[in-house]
Length: 305
Image (tube, rainbow, N blue to C red; front, side, top):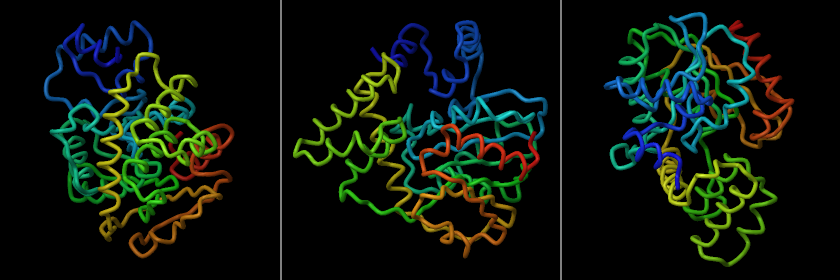
């Protein structure tokens, strides 16, 4: 049975994956369950991932297209910053029917409303990998003129000019979620070239995730299928996206050397774009030893230690 379904049944609460990841011990998890019973009106998609010494200034991580913050685990665990680290995951993971966003801008506007309602500080540094970087840029624009100022935006190998190499939104979503969860292209290719039905291919990908322990043992196939629907929704939003000017602050763009897509697509919209190249590909940015290089760049550039 799915872990989230068990929590819902036993405790009558809907917890986000962020909440579970950021409270890994039994004591922390028990405490968060008690807090959830008392909490009213706070957005479960906005979570404190790690406490900091400061309260007024925080780092906010924006989810990639998969909707969760799993990709940032190494960054959160190894980034020795005094600032608290918050994270946004897609609210559609829990309530798809209520949150059907058809544009990147509408997602960013929703997250701006959450920050303005729930964040007690007055300054944020927005960080996003891949699709999360696009969200960071749009969130910075959405916060313009509000009580929350954006110190800076960090785009980690982010691009919007995506091309559907598979000619099918279902397959594209499946590949996206598989790569985000740690399956390699080498493992996916044999599955994709077969003439199996999409349902059969999806089950095979899910079985690889289970066998390789990329997901919790109680993560069920229905949850995986639901996750695919969220990825398709956000793929559609990104395919419909055309950036516009509107943020005049500094944008730090960290580019993976092996990524073919160019950061130059952003230069006509972002005046203060600072580019740093890190050796590796799109997915190795958050794996050792590349993650150490990324953290060093972040600390030196924004003096967040």
